[in-house]
Image (tube, rainbow, N blue to C red):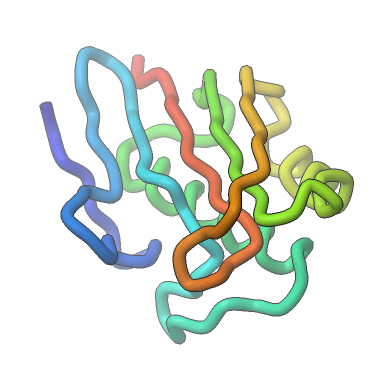
Amino acid sequence: MQIIETKDAPGAIGPYSQCYIANGFVFTSGQIPVDPVTAMVPDGIAAQAEQSCKNVGAILTAAGVDFSKVIKTTCYLADMADFSAFNEVYASYFTSKPARSCVAVKQLPKGVLCEIEAIAVKE
């Protein structure tokens, strides 16, 4: 197993790692829409989905893969009314259409509107 960390995505805010590589798979932790440089959270679901996708992308890059290698995502929304707007942004990053679960949750860290985690294949 190999731990992956990058300064191009927000650091862990708890006792976990940004990413692990194990047995040919890349497992990212859930990425919330925090800008890794400014620590700011953008307003609105579209901007937050964009930042979450960028954070996932930075971790994938650090692990030596890209979005095309993602086989499964889990997405968390604070409000299912944001589903369509979230999907528009998500679809522009995850163009290979990985398997996905998307659920509404009561609350996300820092009061954000979305969180995305991914599993990718490292060949």
